Structures are given as structure tokens and as C-alpha cells.
Length: 108
Length: 291
Figure (cartoon, each protein chain N blue to C red):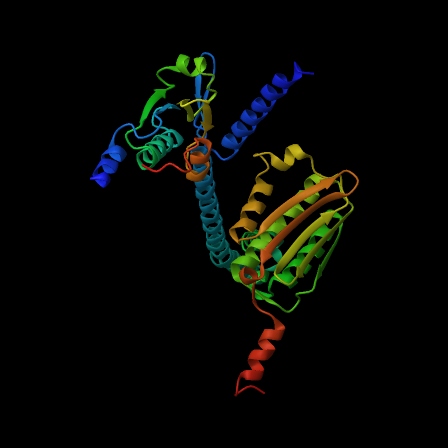
């Protein structure tokens, strides 16, 4: 009985903090596509069901990039939880990205 | 003091951001730069790959063109020597036959034939020179080293510029295409010395070292300007460079007003020397039939 309760508690959403990302990309350029794929994979593996990704294509909306002080693409901004984190590049280095996003201990 | 703390913090953050930006740019992880009004796409990786690929294509084309030119030269030289040279020799023989048949009374005709014969001799010499320029027969007959030696002598004779040749590979047997390439490079380098260097001395060296063969052509002239060195109009230099690169070698050319010009070509040993005297000695010692 106790075990069933524990199980129910674990699967209840949201189990941890909620993550909101804003990813600035340039259309389907190589690094931008890689960043999109890498971020989606990392989120699915580490914070499944607890994340939201807002992708901004600077080729369509350069003003949004300017407003967020984004100089280059791809740029990832962790909006929530605070403090804000900004990561530049294609997010290929999983270990570094997880550390920067404070997700090293999180899985699922 | 307390006012400076947030300032330092801000500065540190900015520095960190700048470092990250530099890292992203350096590792080619950036594909667009966002400005106030425009977005500029950066396709460094793609541009680099395209550049590399077209450079390789150009090199392959240059190598192919060089080989085509060399074989065409061989054909033209042979045609000139065999066909035109033979025809001129027959003409000369015919003229001397006619000359022998003429009587003393036909003196004006005799004179005319002598003059025609002299013209024919001069034509034969010209054809020989052109054929030899196109495809130096001596390169096949005497080998690279003796050809370069004779080239240096001839160059000195024609230009009055003292020219010496030194080597430590006198008895090595050179690969045919490498020998042609080295010969053509020396030819082009000496042409440049005669045309542009205003030198009084030139030195050609061909030295065998542990990993390769090093060819140098130096002079004591006025050097070469950077502009001419990298100009796409310097076809002679481009040709020499392409010949060296086609053999897997390197090509450097430099110089100054005080030191003159120095050309250096390094070619891997495996692409140049077919047989050295020591290796042929080993071969003959191993061979049971050898004496």
C-alpha cells in the first residue's frame, strides 16, 4: 500500500522544477538545426514533461533577438528557473550544457 | 569600495560572455550574427569546405594540364625532328647533289645553291633547337644531372651570368616525370633570373637528404617583390609551384634586394629517386648471376 502511494507520488506532475527555454536559431542552418535537436534530446532525457521550448527564428524575427541581447545564433536562454543562463553554440557538448543548465543530477 | 563590487561583477559577466562568444566563433558554432537591422549568415565551415574542394579540383586540373602539355611537347618535338628535320636534310643532300652536277660555267647558279644550302643548315639547327627546347633529348639520353650541368653551362654562355650547378646525387636514377618536373622548374627559374633578377651569379643545387630531394636556384640579383610573388599574373611561378605540388612536394620562393632570390623545392624521396648507386650495388650483390 505504502509502495503504491510512493509510486503515485513519483509519477505525479510536475515532479520537480519547470524549465522554460528560449532558443534563438537562424532558419535551418547547420548549427541551429543541431542546437534544436540537442536541446530537445536533453530535455526528453533529463526533464521529460517539465519543459517548454520557445524557438525564435531570427531570420523571421530579428527584433526579438535584439530585444533579448542575442548577438549570434544559436543562442539558448534558460528563462526559468532563475537565475537566467545563456549558452552559445550548437549544444553538442552535452556535459557542459547540462552543467551550465544545472541539470547534472536530474534525470527524468 | 562597496560601489565597486557590482561593477566588478558586471565586468566579470561581460568578460565571460565575450570569451564564450569568441569560443563559439572560433569553433565555428555560429551560423548568424544578429545586428540592429540585419541578420548576417555565417557559413564558415561550408565556405572552407567549398574552398578546399575547389582548390583540390584546380590542383588536379593543373597536374593534368601539365602532363598533357608535356606529352604534346614530346609529340611535336618528335614530329619536328623526324619529319621536318628529315625533309630539310633531304633538301640539303639534294642541293649538294645539284651543286656537284653543275658545270663551272653555271657559276651564278652555284652561288645561289650555296646560299640555299647555308639557309637549310641554319633551318636544321633551328629545328633541332626548338625540338630540344620542347622535349630535351638530353634528359632522356644523359639523365637529369648531366642535363642540368649542361643547362647551367649553356645559360652562362647565353646570358653572361655566371651559373654553377652542385649536387650530391650524381649517380642516382630519377623517376622520369620527376626529372621532367625538376628540369622544367630549373628552366623557368633560370628564365626568371635572366629576365628579371639583374644578377651576375646564379647557383643551382640538387641535394639528396634523408627524406627528400631539395632543389634550390639562387641568384645575387635584386630579389622579388611580394606583389609579384603572389600575383596571379606570375604564370612562371604558378607553373613551378604546380609542378612541385604535383609531385607531393613544397615550393617556396623568397628574396630581398640585398640577398637576391632563392627558390626552394622539396620533393619526397619516394617520388623522385628510383634507384641510388648504393641500392643498385646491393641489388647486384644479391643477384646470383652478377659478377
